[in-house]
Length: 327
Ligand code: 2E4
Ligand code: SF4
View 1 (cartoon, rainbow, N blue to C red):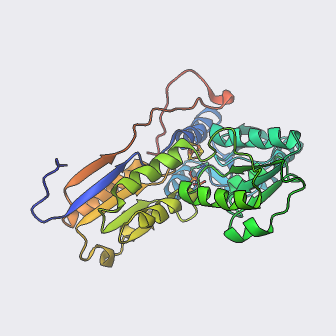
View 2 (cartoon, protein in one colour):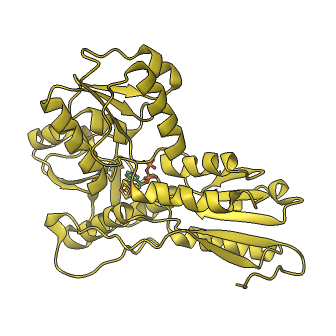
View 3 (cartoon, rainbow, N blue to C red):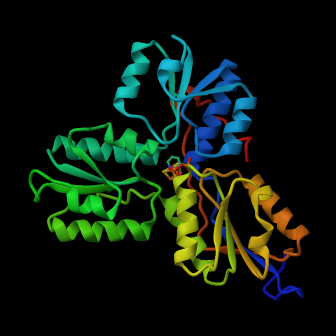
């Protein structure tokens, strides 16, 4: 690690802070670990607990069985719902099958579910900005399927129809690009000038903080490496934001070994960050990989210090302070 003076070989790493685990991911991973400890394997988890290959593989080795749907869970067994949230229909299905459930939905996703309920109750049409097919969007829409319409692409803005343009609100997925979402909102407001804003930001603190941090360093970077999995929305957004903010090149990798040596050719400054579902051990492995190739000088670029934590689901609270073992 070094201070501001450049390394003799001109190579340096800018390391974004904040990066990696957010409070909702830590809570979800600890939930599964504690469920394993308390009830013993197998513990079933519906969908990936968070969208990270390393986390999922590690938990699978410890006795977690990941399933796509609750219908795959044996009657009476324990199932954990993932951090991305589930619709009321999934809760009902689990109850019908007498499953024991622990809900690891991030409280900030639950907040959006509650907003959907409230606006649906007040008979609003809800335009949910988000990515088609993403689990979070499926869970959130499922709170009021008759009232929610998904707005993903710019084309969707032109095609959505509402019953009363003076009673329409936009809400969003928690892990979108802040800038792209505001563009979509502006487009929607051109069509529906009476469009109401959400009562508070739906894009969560962790998503926006990681975008601010990568933006702060992107223009100085010849290459930005984002550690994260292909199905991780917030991680993918970091690649896009880095490119939009002036990085010459940016790539998403699950592991250091996926870095293509050709990306490094001619690069002096390499930016490193990671998505909200990424254990920091994977970033440390990437820093080791870069150090072995001459990028030993690592300068942290800090744009915020995060202190937020969430209590575990009720079923697992025992007063102890915990931190996930998969870090
Ligand atoms: C729940 C909500 O949503 P995304 O694909 O970014 O999920 P990931 O698991 O990568 O990140 C954690 C998370 C979980 C984010 N928002
Ligand atoms: Fe919760 Fe935000 Fe983390 Fe998603 S990224 S789990 S909404 S804190």
